[in-house]
Image 1 (spheres, rainbow, N blue to C red):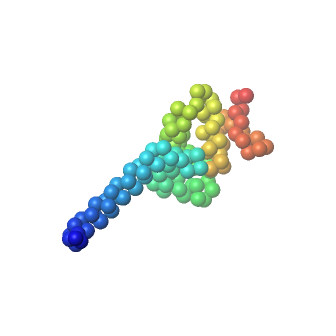
Image 2: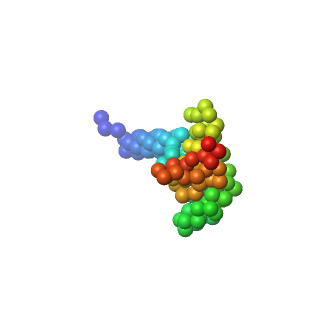
Image 3: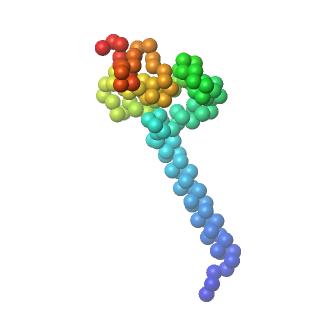
Length: 124
């Protein structure tokens, strides 16, 4: 016996809704725990939503971009994301600055860039 057309449609609708729910859940999980080139997805989304930050990035204004990212509290967001992986706050700080240098070309005042394009603390 063949299923009624309305029950087939209902089944397809349930399958589609289930697939959408899975995709939404996976997307939300990715936003919480995923990274793009080391930058948490939540921070990337914050950056993408901010026109001055986007304009500074795409026009190569690394100093303005750095200042804008500070205003957006991005460094603290990235540190909060990575903090569980580091026991030493200085190592965490270096890691974050290296990510920012690699992505934006800007290095904070407490760091200089060595010959291998690695951030190096000026305090060492």
